[in-house]
Amino acid sequence: MDYKKAGVDIEAGYKSVELMKKYVKETMRPEVLGGIGGFSGAFSLDKIKTMEKPTLVSGTDGVGTKIKLAFLMDKHDTVGIDCVAMCVNDIACAGGEPLFFLDYIACGKNVPEKIATIVKGVAEGCKQCGAALIGGETAEHPGLMPEDEYDLAGFAVGVVDEKDLITGKDLKAGDVLIGIASSGVHSNGFSLVRKVFEMTKESLDTYYDELGKTLGEALIEPTRIYVKALKSIKDAGVKVKACSHITGGGFYENIPRMLPEGVKAVVKKDSYEVPAIFKLLQKKGGIEEQMMYNTYNMGIGMIVAVAAADVDKAMKAIEAAGETCYVVGNIQDGEKGVTLC
Image (cartoon, rainbow, N blue to C red; front, side, top):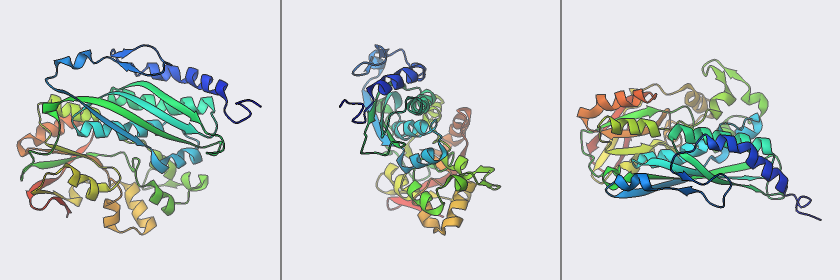
């Protein structure tokens, strides 16, 4: 008896590391110390010494049950982007710059080529936000997970000068809400998606005219990463007073998280066109509108609040970063919460 016969292939692990190295190298920043494959990742903090009060901000998350689509479609090169996005968008919400990222892959059986493809997606997400992929772990769990399945989670660390933290404390009536477009369902609400649509290859390969693509292509579209958009706003000299990453819980749970007591957010549902995937999901599932806005991003992945005088400048900065945005509402005096009208 040996470890391989027990279900853990150490040689496959070595091969996975070798295959993924080229993707990891593409994410390196000057601050990364040492090579790939050490027991820990080292990152120099020399460059943040110029900050008055450098403050670390962090985020951790996974991809959730969206990963089931990757299994069914045998497409593993984008879920890594989702994983990075879910972590670094939260850091951007605080005004932070992501510095480095670590991933964790648990699998029933280590297939080196598949693992490398997953990490390729992680590296792509890191490149999109400027973070270095400085470490990770691939854990083989025979007997605990099916051989053809895996789970993916990640952890990111960023930095912000304390004076630049986005806290919402200065929000006041008259401030304007700008919504930045999502790329689709992103990485939340897939347990409901999988109840509405039959999760078979035939179903996912079905082409829908209103989507302009197959159902699978629409659903697996990776989460947008908004780090560059937030940085672009800051570089334009605009102060983001508050920011909300629209993830699980949709509008009703996430928007209040950016509000101080005494003000409410008012969002106009007709201020932008809700993407077809959400309309199809609502129709097929017979889902009430409130539940849709309480579960999904409905086409808006991030909301930023700025002073009315800064709206045009902020929107131009967002568009310069390659994103689409809309004025979706405003801040009013009232009980803390969000009203959709």
